[in-house]
Structure formats: C-alpha cells, structure tokens
Length: 252
Image (cartoon, rainbow, N blue to C red; front, side, top):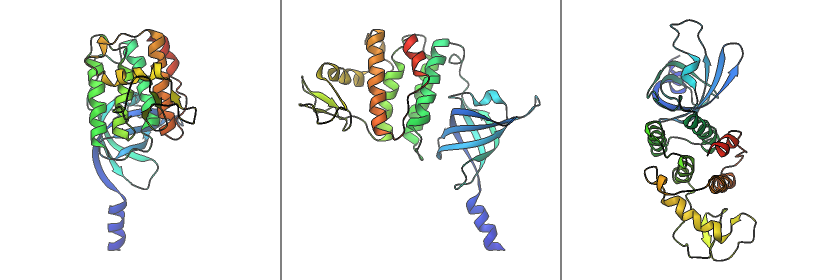
C-alpha cells in the first residue's frame, strides 16, 4: 500500500513555473489544448477546460500566443497532456496586443517557436532570452522591422546550431548544412552564394538596440527571412512552411 502511494507521488507532483503560450487548439465545446514552453520543464501541453462564469480561473483570453503565464499544475512526466490547477498572467503586455505590426510579428514568432523548440527540455538561458526579447518588443516605440531577423538568428545559439562565423573571408560561400563559411561551393545544394553569404555576418552583428542602423529594403529583409528559415529546416526535423510568414513579408 505504501509503495503504491510513493509511486503515485513520484508520477504526480504539484509544481509551479512560468510558461510562454505558443499555440491553442480548440477541443470539444469548452476545451483547449495549449502548447507552452515552460521555464522549469521545457515543452509541455495542457488540457484546459474554459469556464463559463465571470469568476472562472480558466479564461480563453489568458492563452493568447506569447502570453507569459504563472502556472500551477500536477506534473505527470509520462502524460501527453498536463492538467492546470491555477494560472495567472505573469507579465501583461502594454503594446503588442494593440499594435497591428507588433501583433503580426508576435504571431509569426509564436508559430516559429512552436516548431523550433518542439523537443526542448529544461533550458533557463533560452527562456530568459525569450522573456527579454518579448519585453523589448513590447516596450519599443519604433524601428522594430528587423526584430524577427535578429530574434531567429540569435535563438540558434540557445538550441544548438549557432553558425560558425570565424572563418569568413571575402568570396566565401555559406554552407547551410554545416553552418559555416567555405571557400568553395559544397557538393550539395544547401548553400548561400558569396554575395548573400557576406550579409550573414552583417545579420549577426545586429542586436535589438542597433538593428535600426541597418537599413534594408523589403525585398532584402524577406530574402534574409527565407534564408534563416531554410537554415532552421535543415537543422530542426519536420520544420514546416509557416502560415504566418506571408503576413510578415507583406508588412515588413
């Protein structure tokens, strides 16, 4: 009897963590399946029953993409879907939900993260990077057209395939498969020609504070976006075409 009790405790543990909402999918009449990236446990999915009363803890508006939440839940390591006990907003955004340009970027970022972090486990530096990035976007007053480029390039540092930029010389190609510059075209099609490869170092010099100094046309920005996504598709199994991409390309 006691052995069964301790096994139950091991399989089920009440825990608290912060988490970032990536996607919600409607399930039945009042249910949602919510995919999140948590600070303490990496990727988790939750079954949420949305309440119908004003005083219900589980409100649909809490689970908008990129909402930063405080969660309390019964952690079951072997369960596909976790069950929330309590949820609260950790950091309410002041501008992202109300600015159509920022909102479009946030929807793109949420869809991008849904696939880029699909197999992520506990990773505090990654979560801190996401928190800082989103708070920067929320607080910015302009000059954020390059945000998604900087965000995607720098994210690769936290999930294991940051490109090697040390060997660049004028005239090099960039090998997307190996993430490195090479003086000759590799024996496969996944590489960037020298004229565009030179821009990769430029992209990596950008950060949120200085990216406004790097002027790009819409065509150049969209091409950079396509190259970065191609890089991710080669390094993240099953990374698909993103539905939100066309909106970002049209706006920026």
